Amino acid sequence: MGKNKTIFLDRDGTINKEVNYLSSKQQLEYLPGTITALKLLASDNWQLIILTNQSGVARGLITEDQLRDIHNYMLETLKRDDIKITHIYYCPHHPDYGEKVDCDCRKPKPGMIFKAAQEFQIDLHHSYLVGDKLDDILAGQAAGLKSVLVKTGYGEKQWRENSQKAEVTPDYIFDDLLEFAKWVVNKGE
Image 1 (cartoon, rainbow, N blue to C red):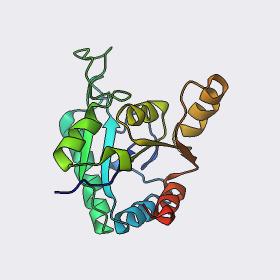
Image 2: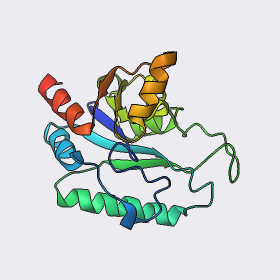
Image 3: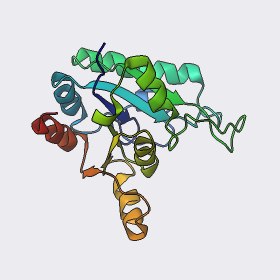
Image 4: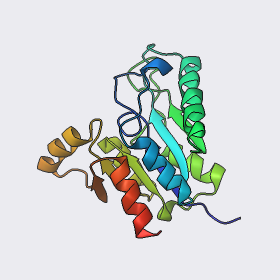
C-alpha cells in the first residue's frame, strides 16, 4: 500500500472559533471559509486528520464523553458537506493538572502525528500540519512535516510575539485555512 499525503489540522482557532475550552457542540462555530477550505482539500485527495490538545479534560472542565460528543458532531456536520475527516486525535493530558501526565501526545510533542502515521500509512515528508499556535508548528517540525501557521485563533498574536524573538519559524504563514487550501491545491502536490 502506498503512503498517503495528509494535512494535519489543529482544531480550535484553525477549524473552529477559539472559545477557551469548548465544552459542548452548541459552542462549535466553524471559522469563515473553513467548509470551503476542507472541501477544496478533500477534492484534491488530501487525507484530513485533526490533532487537538484538550487539557480541559485534565482540568475537569469537560469529560472525555463530552469531548467525543463534540467530535462526533463535527464529523457528522462535515460529512453533510461531503468532507471526510479520517480521524480526530486528541490529548486529554496536562503536566500540571489532573493526573499531571507528561505524555508524548501533547503538542508540541509529535506523538499524535506518529500514531496517525503508523495507523494510516502517512508520508510525513509530503504532508502538512496547519495550526494557530507555535506548539502546532513545533509538533509538525518534530515529525518532519511542513508547518503552516494560520493567523486565526491565537495565530496572529503568537506570530507577532514570536517574530520579535525568532524562536520558531513556520515553513509557511497564511491568513486562514482557506488561503492555505487554495495555495496547496494550486501548487499541485
